[in-house]
Image (cartoon, rainbow, N blue to C red; front, top):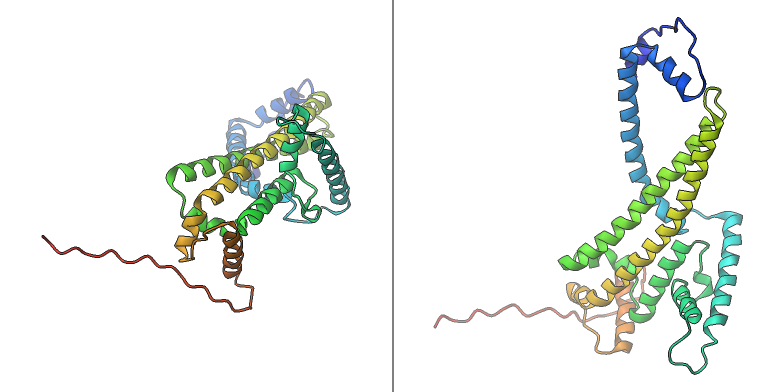
Length: 295
């Protein structure tokens, strides 16, 4: 960039023919070898910087699409009303099962879609990704009275290698599709920004913008599927490692489902450190191993 700023630009002796990319390439070539080299380095630096920015924005994009980063305003209210109407239709379809043991394919699809929606209407959010996370957290809370978001950092330290690998793969798939979605959106923005320029042909720019928009829509649907799979992995990890979670904190293990719900709720309150009501829990500490005398 410094080379381009400090080097005096030599105007071309002959007007460059053509339009669009051909004329732009001709103008750059007339700047000389130094300008070409500096332009190539500048392009490489811009691509590397854009890649870092996209990687940094992948997780905030998932949070934004889950509805937990910023409120969505009137469009969010409209989407939320549509989600509630869709939930009502799914409930009416899944209720027409009759006495058959095996539900019909339509009913099975309705039940599968309902699994990605929270049971409580007040827990519904405008986005599909947010509803998938909310439904998973609601199932974990109803089953174990454990806050999955709160206990997740502790659970990650207790995973065995296969469970850690599966969760990491599901998480990387979500972030990878979020990065690709950002690249598609950036392509749309760049194409729309370059469209009004004088030396850029509008037809290929329009084709690029439409193609990038279609790819972004497909990636958004794929991102929802990846989030569904990730939510299933998290739910299975909590179900499998909850005893290890209790043992790591010295918490008494529940003996039945009722004791698990009561103990899980107390354990969640213990981790939040927001409940000022005193309660007493007798910790279960493993006995130290005894050393046997030599024979």
